[in-house]
Length: 366
Image (cartoon, rainbow, N blue to C red; front, side, top):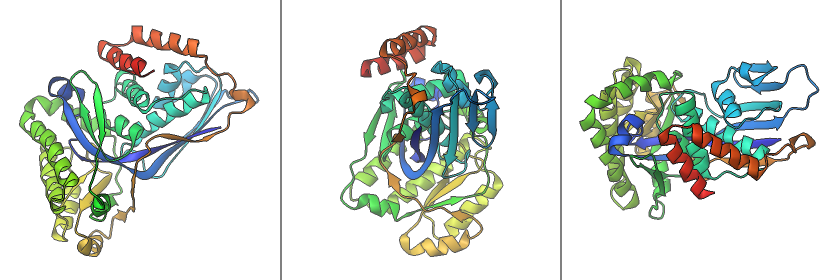
């Protein structure tokens, strides 16, 4: 049995610049943090004692005779990508709802890759996990996704993520003055709106509008540097909240699907109750809302949003981890290093030019 634990993330500023149609021309940057709510995946090879070959437990329970019949798109894609033909059992548990703006889909893909490699007795670097999750979600599943979620959930921590036009990326942990991280945490509240949505649909609309939103996206990119300066110095922390407000006003201009009227109503109530800034997390449409508010105004804000669920959280720094490793006698079918490199070379030859560059970067790490 292998258990992977991969954190969800909160994106503060820069989200939207990480779509390939933008960063391949202009580069991108995002400032985000992971939090202590997680996606857990329990994985093991399934012994041939049952009528079914593999069993996948998520919001559904799938018992299939062949992997081609698996309905969960990420599970099916990962097993095919890694050429896992043995019977497998995968069980998913999440601390928070899926499709809610916290990078849960990418946390799932990263965590599943991590667990599958561990099942084969192999260690994956955080960069490998991020690059391969990007490849699976964007190139294989053809999802309308950016690249920040895969990177953030794989690496963990409070980071500035800079993406180059060639797809390479740098993850720089923020070094804050003593007590600053607690000060930031004490000014944040996270609420669940009760509405989940499919981010890819909203993201698709945003991607179409990118050519017409150059000014907004350049401004959103510059806000990442401003946010970094505010947090890494002794400037008034409320400036960070004001920046969140400015960024949210800009983000809403990218697509009319980002902020439905009920989201605008919630945001207006929060501002009237003392919130300095905030945002709807993720692509938009629903999910979780983050607010920046002075500690003395937190009770007033909670009262104003009493119909929403307040979700306590803290920051985390570990990223995706294998938290339990106990291979059974049925788990000894591990791929050899030679087989593994042969598979990687085959994937390299069959992949797109941009993905070849990512896989080359992975090979360099190895």
